Length: 383
Image (cartoon, rainbow, N blue to C red; front, side, top):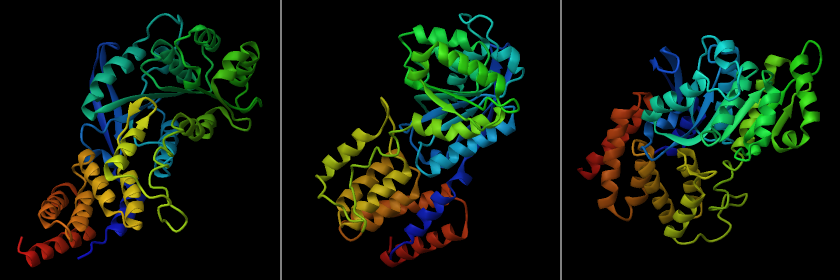
């Protein structure tokens, strides 16, 4: 019996945003000497993964402003849906008094908010198994703080996105320009229109500093939103910045099982083991290992299967089970591929798929039908 896996896969990934979860973490902050709350958003695939799947972390400041956070989250989700950027743990950080918490009087002093993020939040989110690829995002006053925090911990962050910064901007530029330990290509700065009703004051300061420190501004990533108002800048620049920060992600498996327009593999694959090694070698975010995502595994497997390389697909699904042991569809795929050639190996995969459908998935009409199909197979085979 053939399962309707293609339909289920399309459905799962077209509505993957609905499987996301947001947790509220409230804890005592030694840095602030009081209770603070953050919101931790995990993607749909998170519940299926093992601890070896370490997701990048995106810190979004100004979590008290829905007008800023919601469009930012929408940008991230859409870019993930289109496979421009990876799945991620998103930490939304509300500020109680953003002027006091983000204000930079002394560039050398360590602000409580910096300690809160790099030490206390970092400790609190360990339960989510975060990776070491970290991005901090701020706007206006919090944009300057994002640059400040990056300046003090360039080894902690992989990128900083500062949308329309102003506070202490010249101090930050001169300090970072002189710091040889800072990779300027990890800095992203956006700015709005010079028009009086748009982003005049911030743009005026930006233009002055760009002329005064040309080497710095040539080395960093810039987005000049010449038609945008101050508050629209992050919405305009965000997608470009995220795409650049994760530029190599979308094509990391492009050389594996390349296909033509008829979806047939162009060149004969290497051995099963060698193909797997190629995939794992490409499973990187910069210098960090980042396991293949569920959609990536399904995509590569479908290319092997379309050209009859079933053993390559089997190994790929087995790798998928290693990283996503709670994802029932990989077990179903293994059952379908193994049943004609190795019933002994096929049976436990069908049983595991059934168990996960019962324990991990909602009781939707489609899932109930799938469970019924599995039951019929077991009855027919007397398993």
